[in-house]
Image 1: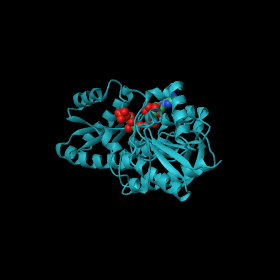
Image 2: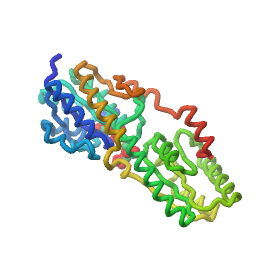
Image 3: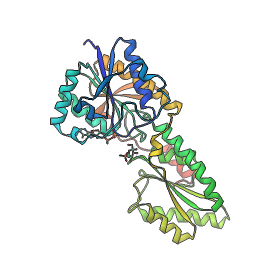
Image 4: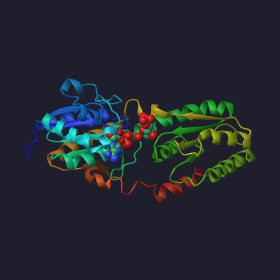
Length: 331
Ligand code: ADP
Ligand code: F6P
């Protein structure tokens, strides 16, 4: 199959390193003599025919920039076949011989449902801070999000220490605890609440209170930092805050990190990962790999069927669990 033109888009939650990936796709395409077009606003761009030819000018000074030069978006319409048919028709009209979609697990569902409607390869690249994609060790943006969370924990600890407060630090990750896990370890937190280990609010509260009791008995002063994955505490974190405050009498505050974790200049790990996966995605298009993801496994890029990127959701391994227990992060 002759490949003269490739299309690329970014979809779903943006992630630091998406730009680095677009750059790598451009460079790899260019070295193969292939034109690159960029669709804007995620799948909306395919439906609305919003695209332009990416040139060298566009990728200058790009590798260090957060966000995505193609804009990202969610696109409810894309869940309906009639709109995906329109997207496929527009792709054909654009003359593209392949499509690269940089996004998370939701965007990959889009890849899977568009592929049967378009007779050219569609390749996914995992770009999400959540790291919740099976078949790849890491997703683009994950390392930067952890770095941001760790820097924030370091800072909040200073003020928490000064006032001897409890801080509940709420980090992103959707239904996966990877960001919480690693930012709690690297940030030296006192407790971590993860979807993978959470049993009930009552059980978790008991474990936190027990730990605070021991601290008091041992005359440990200063801050107490609890890191939690977003949207996990039943009824919201205010409930946990009130319980801790009333049970311990210690001033308890909530810090929701939110979207700052999605921004900022990508750390080197994300830049290198994005460069590897972007380059490899172009190779996959040339090899006519369809409905596959460019993943990274043990430092090497690997083509993984999109259908295998969700089957076995990544779980905490036994080592991580026992380490968390030994470091008393779980209670
Ligand atoms: P992410 O890719 O970061 O996980 P979302 O879950 O919001 O983000 O998905 C991004 C986009 O992918 C959605 O707005 C939609 O356009 C597309 N998408 C998600 N699920 C489906 C689906 N079941 N069928 C087709 N497209 C989907
Ligand atoms: O998937 C990335 C992510 O940042 C999640 O961690 C978070 O739950 C979600 O996106 C937030 O989405 P939105 O930007 O639509 O609020």
